[in-house]
Image (cartoon, rainbow, N blue to C red; front, top):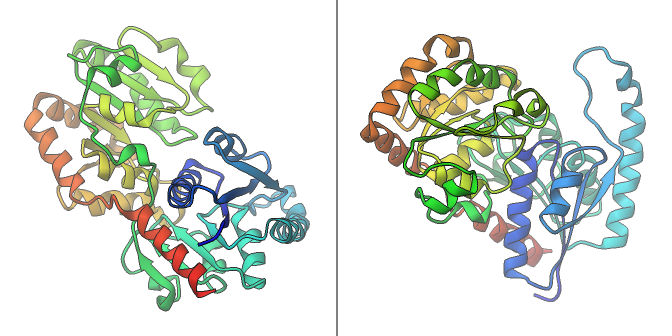
Length: 364
């Protein structure tokens, strides 16, 4: 293929951004001279994270429609119209061979405009319950890559391809515990390390749970790598030090996963996909505040296969200590959970998605 051009759009949360970056990295690996542009929503985290990953990004004036009565909804129609004009301008100037969307506000106008111009378009849906943007786009795009079975409930069956979720390349290698990874966080490789993940923005109730158990961790000589999320870091940063590494966001997730003996995490789609490749013991505490309670559905499907522990948020304060104690005291139980979870991973997801993008270009 001659020099190719790709536009990717995904944002709002890490769950949309990092799959897009993983796809971009694979495209660049296969086509080193390709031109790649991201399109995001102004003011959202992709405008920071994408340039950090080495890619150019342009921002659209777009945001979500608030579910409750909100004055900001009055601007929504104008934002959509302006974003469509902006998207068409970007497409006309960049002239991409294919456009890829991974969800988030900006992917709607961009992929809608691309499909209307007959530019090959693909969306990648991470969740078992898709957002409204991808439901609308599914009627327009050529291919829909999904991570769960039975997605024909939401999307045209003829366009569906089960690929799994793309994850960052640094998570597909060996992730066993080592001194370099543990030392990166200023911790001791001879002690058990608990990694706490509440998602890229943080999880208030998980942070509160961890704070309430700090004395317990100290008694058990358990070290913490505690990702609080940027909204909560200033509240908890005072606990940093003394076998506790408190950070707003973890940039070296490969080191964090290598350092961990045990992980507490939300069960969003990206987290589940990454943790399946990591193969460590996980306690999932799903967020109850998401559409169709899909985090609980994700975690339950895994727990029922003996590959993780599901702890409902409403039961967390009551049951966390007993569950954690069992896992801390049994290396064999941790190993059993980790091995079962690793069997569910799809390490070739990114490659399969890029295969489909290349097929679309050849057909065009």
